[in-house]
Image 1 (cartoon, rainbow, N blue to C red):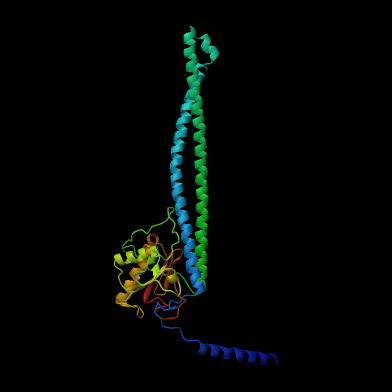
Image 2 (tube, rainbow, N blue to C red):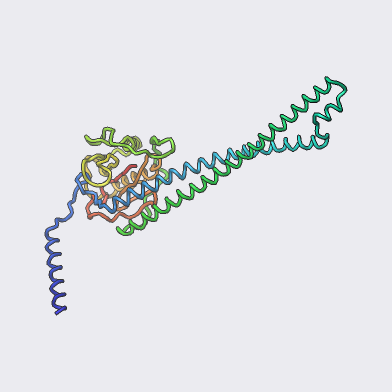
Length: 338
């Protein structure tokens, strides 16, 4: 009886699967400007943004802490030298007093030939005592300054350990979650010979402050962030002049936020099919250019030809797509900005 029920249940499942498969349309061979055309899923989106943003924020804090530590270390050297100079002077004063015998009011009076000499000796006593007290106070202050500088350096070292731990955690999370979607490390696209972009404005602490979609998008009738506009202008200025499309009202990634652009690799307007030959080399160079200048432009991640670059893990194969040129990113380079 149980066997019969199991067989019936399996037959029902198979039947439902066939019906669902028949009812579900095949993935559209859409251009990137069509909603859903880039193969985005919530899991991939969350991995790409959270891992990249968290990693880069920790990296900025780590760099700032390292700079503060370097400055504090220089200040500490100066404080220690000043302390040593004052300490040597206090030692000389103490040694001189020991050799000559301490001058006090009674000895000044006994050694004085008269009232005038006594007053001179008393004044000298007051000056010497005042000077010694002043140098002792300066020595104590110098020692306190040295101790504070050392404590500040220790604090910065602790901060760096924390930020490094955050970066490691974000990297491990990205590797683990990308592996769920079939991602694994690839050789990627790297080239130091490509041009260097001009630095995009950062915060005073070196961070990348959040930006709204306030700049006119030169590639559409929509808007993009000032940072994205800078990236578009720099890539065009440095020779990547083929068709680009940034803002769109719907769809995946950061396009509706004005923080993403799709760079076509074919000549003319549009995106076309899988890139080959010179078009693929153009895409390789463009992707490598964006990666090389990620710190200068504020790049969050890059997707090109079934690969995705994240600052935390480098290049990883990009598998959550439909096999068409748009979702595989084989006809365009996708750029997402912080």
